[in-house]
Length: 102
Image (cartoon, one colour):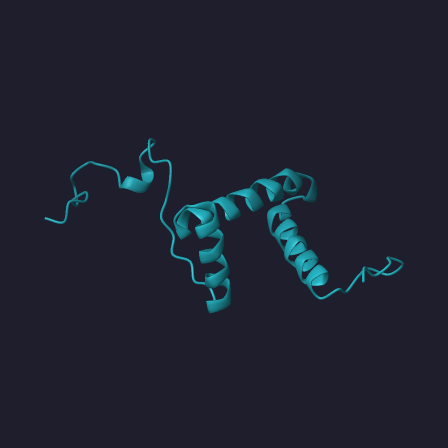
């Protein structure tokens, strides 16, 4: 036996149970991103997985606040705008008529 629900057992899969509060996920990072996450986790005094969860959870909370006003695809649009803003700020590219910080 593998410990999980057996075919015909009548038990719902773990994912469908109302008391399950979290789900596992596998995430891949590039080496430089992994190094950053390891450094953040060390500074916070937590495991890397906890640091990743905290960062993602914080960003999702920010995105959710704006998603409803953007319509049916609001979450995707808000996430794309966050990524775009980070890329623009990181490369010092700015919107027209906005002074460049030196």
